[in-house]
Length: 115
Length: 115
DNA sequence: GCTTGACCTGGAGCGCGCTCCAGATTCGAG
DNA sequence: CTCGAATCTGGAGCGCGCTCCAGGTCAAGC
Image 1: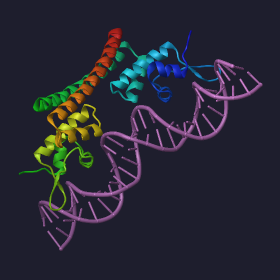
Image 2: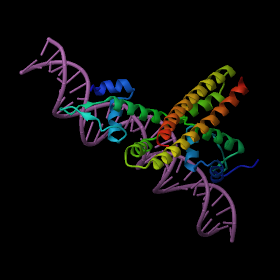
Image 3: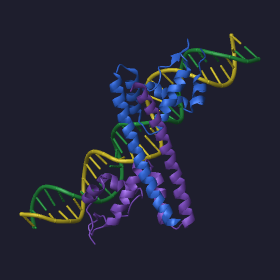
């Protein structure tokens, strides 16, 4: 199975080398497999997972949130627990959307006023 | 005209005293009028403006963004300039909404999977 | 006038999320 | 085998957005 060097993984995901290492230290990704000499070898699965993490980071979730997310999806939890957690997170994101809509509304008012 | 003490303003806006002072130092609000003895006296206009700032902060805008926002709305700018700025900001917020929707979509997938 | 509490200023401290650095090791082309 | 590029680790540093603190001033009830 073909793997990616750290540089290639960074390139593919758009995440810096330092941040990839940071995410791994924080338990958001990996642990990533290592070569005999200790260099990281990223699998496609790793890359996919990094994509998920990036998606949530861009949505404004914090590192601690993501750690929890990883824990819930990986460790032993009943489907009910997972779903409850996911729904709760979903609710938080919807609230953020609402906050954004509100701000956009204010902007629209101002635009209408000057437009 | 009736004014509010710092404590009352904090109460009304839900923003801490320290943060109110911080916002004023950063030029996001005020300058707030002072009593003879140097204590702040918040007007209703101040409170309203603090509400706007809070709205944008909750939408995720940074202090620097808000400072710029204040500058554009207050200083001498043509309506065109203001509208251009406001539209640009609006676009940025819509992008955030899109990022959130994407993350919510991922959550929905997971929920469907476990549900 | 005194006391008590709210408020003032300037500056230090903090948690987050990276980002950068030093010094050592590994990899791979030639 | 050699050499330069890539990677490793541990830890320091940084910008943001507050938050807290010390030491002093102001305001209001008794």
